[in-house]
Image 1 (cartoon, rainbow, N blue to C red):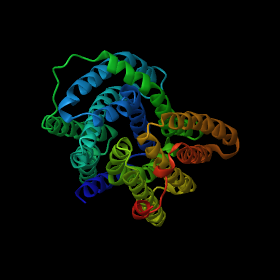
Image 2: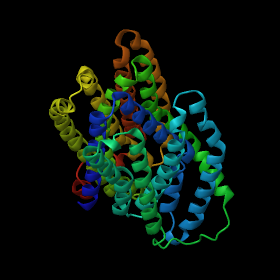
Image 3: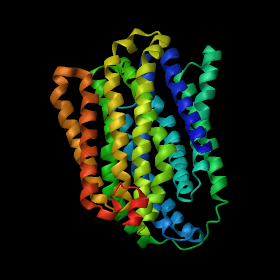
Image 4: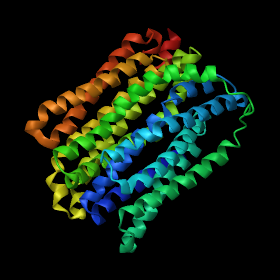
Length: 417
């Protein structure tokens, strides 16, 4: 309950921030905020190489006293990636995809968010999701609440730079907390030599994963740039507003459901404990479906009063986008059910192929229908791509998972059999 409360507080902070930005800033500023935050989120995966998909499983295979040698190698790899990809990321500004005025904020927030993300993953692997939630609360929730209050009380804070400054401060405090807790986990073997062979094996495994992740996350980054091209920066502000509301579903499920269940699924499969695996999958299915349904009902009931409170006709004029954006969030959430089942079994190819193919589907569908539907083509293309992912992963789950690990009968009946 404490974990869920922290995550809920974080979501409330995000909600407040999005709505007060929509109320106090011009729609174009909200659009610029959406572009920067989405690009930082996308770049996180490039500089991280999705190496955690390999390192987390490796950490769970050994005692905590031996984690240091793996974490040291992971850190060295990240430094190499920054040295290689840093100049590439500058092309975003040379190509005028992002204004040069945002460049210092972009790199500062990228580094802070990356460190916090890796710390949170480490803590979750160490079965400390509460501290991971505290880190998330500081990096995404508390600063959003504070800057919202300051913007409400004093008009001099109603600028985009104030938001980025608060974000950076919150991320720095979260990093300090995460480092402090990580130092007290009893992790040993920090003085071990760097295992370059371990790094190379991890990179070989992670590269297909990062291609898949960049394809999937590309959907939620490319969509904003594409929508801006089909509409304008002001209308993008409405798209960012609706996306911010819908993405709260995934954030809540990530915190209250996925973070608790998927480490147990990995261990259950490694131990060949089909009863624990089936029980975890049943919890994952029921909790995801119930919470998604509850969220959709609340969102549909609340959207009109919220837009009325904002008092900007532009957002009402684009409300037809909201059901499609909300549907895309639900499809993404449902797709995570078979995703974690496949990931726990190391059935990586099915995940990789579905993500890469989905990006091609999104580009094809959106390009095909955009001449007739304009900006609406973007969320429709997203829905089609995410529905494809859901179907592919579900089919792969039933095809690749051993029969004893995919029965949703109660565990008692399996024991009786």
